[in-house]
Image (tube, rainbow, N blue to C red; front, side, top):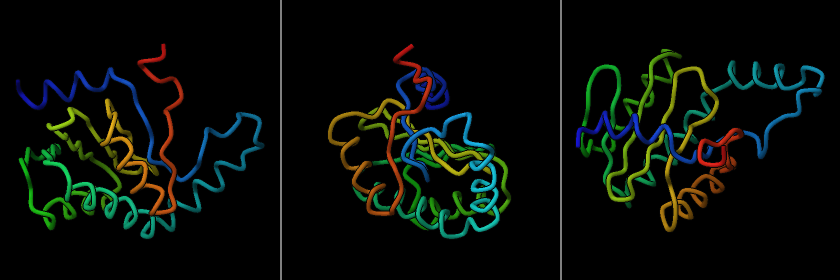
Amino acid sequence: MDVNTRIEELFEKEAYLIDILPKSVPQDAGGRYFSVEEYFRSHRSDLDRRLTRIILRLYCYYDMTAVTEEGTAEQPQAEQLAALLEKVFREDRGFVNIYLPECDALITFYGGDLYMTVYNISGEARELLSQLTAAEGLFFREASGNNAKE
C-alpha cells in the first residue's frame, strides 16, 4: 500500500497529542490561553528542540518514513529527519508526517502548531512515546474530539 494512502487512513484513527499543556483549556479561561500561546510562539526554539529530540529518540527504536510537501524520505538519516523538522519550525508553515510502519502509527506536525498529533499508536510504542514526551517536560494525552471515541 502507498504510504500517502495509509497516512490518509490513519487520520481517522484514535489521536493523541504531544503538547505543552496536560489537558484542554476551558473556553471560559478569560483569554489566558491566547496570551500563553503567543508567548510560546514568539519563544519557540526550546519547544522545537524538545519536539525534535522526542522524534530522534523514537527513531532509535522504529523505522520511519517522513513525508513533506516536497516528497517522501524512507528511513531518513537522523540529520535529515532533524532538518525536515527544523525547516517546518523555521518557516512556520508546511508539514511533516512521520509514518512508523512497524506499529502502523503516524506522527504529524504542521508549521505554526505548538503540538504534534499522534495517530493509531498503542502498546509498547505508545508507552515509549509517553516516556520520551515526559522526559522533555511535555504531555502525552488524548486529543479532544478523538476520532475513535466519536
